[in-house]
Amino acid sequence: MRKIAFLIIFMVTGSQLNAQSNLVGMWEGGITVPSGQLKIVFKIDGLSDKLSGTLDIPQQGAKGLRFTSVTQKKDSVELIFSAGQVKGVFTGIFENASSISGIYSQGAGETTFKVERVRIDNSDENVLDNETEIILQNGDIEIGGTLTLPLGEIKAPLLIMSSGSGAQDRDSNIYDFKIFKVIAQTLSKQGIPTFRYDDRGINKSSGNFADATLDDLVSDVDAIINYFKNNEDQNFDRFIILGHSQGGVVAGKIAKENESIVQLILMGSTAPSLSEILRYQVELAYQNSPVDKSLIENEIVARESLMRSLVNDKNIEEARLAYERAYIDVLNDLPDAQRNSIPDINATAMNQASSLVAVYSSAQMKSLLFYVPVSDLERLDIPVLVLFGGKDTQVTVSQNLEPIKEALESSGTSFDVITFPEANHLFQKAENGSVNEYPFLAKEFVDGFLDQISVWILGIIN
Image (cartoon, rainbow, N blue to C red; front, side):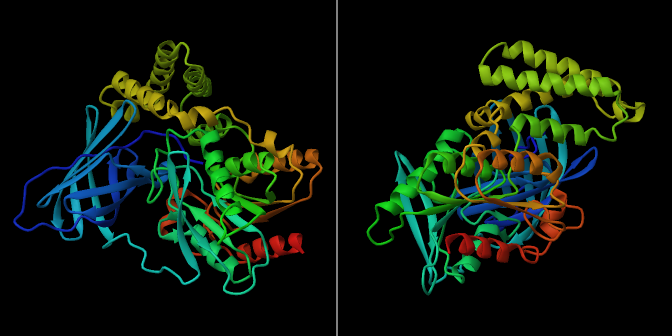
């Protein structure tokens, strides 16, 4: 799941050079912060007079944050992103054709950044013969996706894949590891058809992902199922749903509600509510902090009170001020060197509180914060495959495996739980499983992962 932290936003200007470099493509680099470098990735598409793009912040678990504006004037660039009350500005110029540097600002704060070109464009030239692009409707929302069919006999129901937190494209492309595309092509060789789709507001899908509640995301899967049930040329009447991370919450809910789903696969999926997961992540972040434990607990409790006020739309300003006071107490209890490095503690606390309000205020966040996924699993009557990475630091085995097992045991349905000891949240072979590793690992699944999925599907069907 995405770690909620200080959001980052950008605008770019600067001195102009005579020639205009090409901004389209993928760029990776970092923003200088007190603790070191915060890794950032820009993915820019379009023509020079109509650019668009997204921002990834891997250390915060954020992916596909859409820029509201991307412009380029000669070798000056302007990228703008905003989320609620949070707005950031990224300003820079091309040092050369493959390097941009400048200033990042958010509120009154400023720091430096630099990015390097990783890829010249974001197009996918590898469209395969067994893949068909489909655009279908869910009310006034368009959903774009890819149907991948076996070249030979179809041996299983259609598997639909639902991606993790943050707006993601149909391939669930995380640092060039196209998770869902790899799954689709591998399963097609085993006779298993698949459909993967763009999240709302990404690529060929319309709408706004942050504005989509859990029920909206479930309705998108319902629309996909209805499309294939009623399509004469590409007709299916039974379905498997695979959910990765937050997509597992969507998958569990739709599996409970839609009788056309005959199998469920949970891939690094969560058991407790998002608020519980965020508490765990914040506690982990504070684990080695010198700050008094009671002050840390007060900050976490104030954070959770702010969440509940936003969900209930009551006493929001009171909760925001209470959080500011709790965070000020934490900052004041830092060792002298750290505390003195913060120019204005009150302003820092105010910015932190405003950032949390902006993030927790989205329709999707409010629908997920106190929703308990295992409540759906307790009511299933279809086979379930549960997959975990032993080194997953985002959806940990310790917090999630036992509650999911208990829920499925309570349901009385058949299920299998498999943990891959060396795997991270993306099911790659990992060193320590941290988000920071993702860009540097091999773009492939840990040994045995894909085989387990295909063997389980075909074994259940047969």
